[in-house]
Image 1 (cartoon, rainbow over the protein chains, first blue to last red):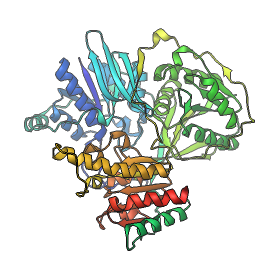
Image 2 (cartoon, each protein chain N blue to C red; image 1 turned 30 degrees about the vertical axis):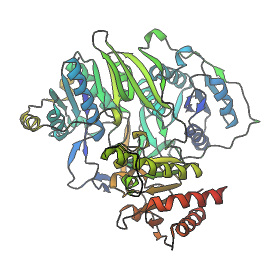
Image 3 (cartoon, one colour; image 1 turned 90 degrees about the horizontal axis):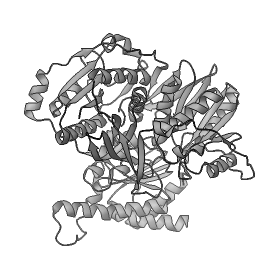
Length: 259
Length: 346
């Protein structure tokens, strides 16, 4: 069972992000593995423990953007590749999906490609299904439970969390799976894992290394702006008893005409 | 032809995700600016009844397919169907609702159509015949202005960004049946069934959300059943608190949300989580009970129209966002508040 996990490096979710000169800026906030991707890494490691094989990390990013990769290696992944190329500076999701599809092919003999739900910076949530479509693999998105994974038959059975509840789906492998946060709690890296990750050799692949036709980007984002500042008048409701406070609050809320 | 706006209606066994009609509303205002017509697409089980609703909402041309491959939702055959109609119609804009299905169908259709995709858009403007989309990024901490260099332009629209058109049941029509172009033997997934069907109002569509946080478990005066360990007592206490949260939500016709802390402590399922790693919501009214308001939670709810905070800690950051705040115990405030609304809203 060979599993690839595609991860992205993003600013920490606690970062104060502001627009400066039309660009996003997060000051000196740390760069980390996209939190959603940690669940994909954990899922991969659990399946590897059950079925053997390798867990390979692929990340696309700037040269030296290896913090996220090191976290994944410290959790116990076997190996990692960083795809980095100046040509990808203006990449859109479809370009990234073509790059990931090509990298997955280059890794070779992959049964399962795992992704987080979306990246917390761009909030697109389209890269995994796009990668699946390019590979011609089925996509099983927002998986909360892997019920069965059968490497011999080349099948997987999962529960997907959708708006109406859980959909139970069986699919042939290879497949692309995106995981929901409730699939498993990500493990903490071990001390040995952290030491190993710090010394790990992380090969960098350029677009030329991928030997694939990567299309030109079509989506442009000329400007990132701060959301309009909202003037909120704070009003603390007080009273002599909870009943009085509740009555006043109910009247005030109804007065806002949002009900 | 060649200047069409395609609108995808997301439905599940005849139940339409309400944001779908908002997307039709957005398409109608775009069609006025861009010219060209609107083609509505309905896939899935029993499309006829949904098509009928689409006519009531003002659709004039509805395409559907009763292909057995589309009876249950699977992204691959559904994408085939969308792409086939988009190509035949020469669609310049393809609009989906931001739902689980809508987002992945948009993503995959964009691959087949060689197009750009802009998901989860909250506003659209037309400049020189091109759409400029606004999308929240970094969980709404920033807004990105974005556009596609060439068509077709594939977009998903967030719930509550546009108004649904008025319903007029005198408007009817006949949907056009098309071959979905799906070969079942090419599809490598099979739906085995559904579990845990959920009822109630979904967070994304909710006009009112009442949320609970870690503070919901903080009521020492409750006496838990005997034989529970410490963690079980904590969860039990929290569940009593979430009952109060749920009762208020129910009187207001709203949905129940939760902070990450409440979900991580196993008080409520992950489906209820509001915030950067949960659901991003913008209801008309958001009532935060026992939620301190970590930056990640704020990111998920700060665009709510009116925010109300109930918290024991007067220094809780949530109060800075709140139009109305109550410094107090949610166990004291929620029951009379629910009763007050019950009296006023009947």
